[in-house]
Image (cartoon, rainbow, N blue to C red; front, side, top):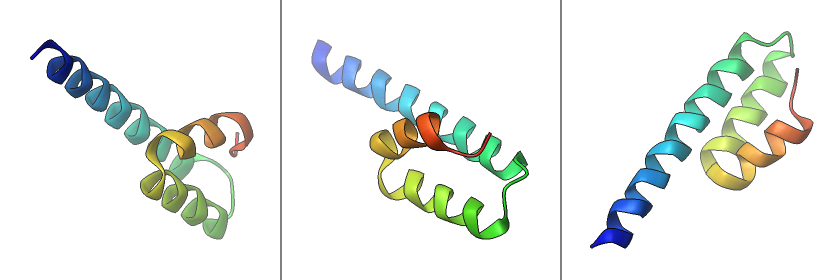
Length: 59
């Protein structure tokens, strides 16, 4: 039961971080095509996409 609560909490944190990343991407000065690619990457690969965006995404 405790592991279900922890995984649910981690999922919620991941969701919040993904929403934050998508908002930051949309507010960046990158081209529209680049923004779309980053958002699709984060939506398709939530954890890996978030890590890649943090390391190499538009600033």
